[in-house]
Image (cartoon, rainbow over all chains, first blue to last red; front, top):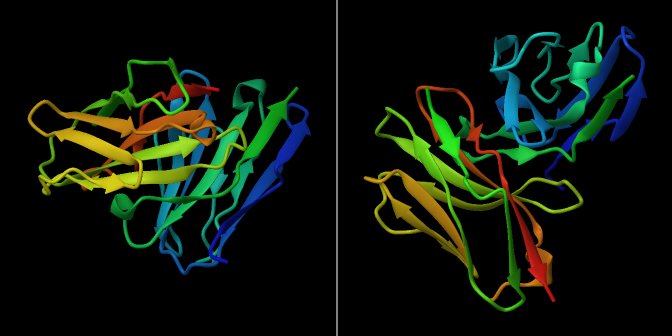
Length: 113
Length: 114
């Protein structure tokens, strides 16, 4: 089944404790992206990647890191999480550029206390 | 910068009725794409419909159709014969080739009443 797999689905952590949210797609998509969803703000892009070893900042990159060492994987790293990073996170991928629309992962609900 | 505006935070409609969700957008590009995504309580993001800006014909997918008014920069979603399973948050989104991303609106929470 073609899909984007995110893990974990839920995560509660403490301020300052480094964490990684994994994302993997099995569709050979070149384009991958991370979004966060907050009430009243919709979805905002954090980082994106056009291909292996090519990443760039989105609209809200502060406090996040990403890497794209393999085509299928695009992990999101929070080096020192803070409470304002409590949010619902989505990984997404697309064939070619995003004009085809995204395939989304099932989301990660992150709470930082 | 591109923007997407959804001015209806919440809507509700009786089952089997027709409902229209509004979306306006702004972009300086001539070549762009518009989308409606559905997010049910499961929180999965599901692509409902896609419209290419250079096509004048409005896109349709079964009970879902759009009214694309390019000059007015308006992109509304019509759901006909609404069903309980249509209860969800709906997001309008824009992609243009000047920005490597989908830009989303703030969403409309739609409730279908039995």
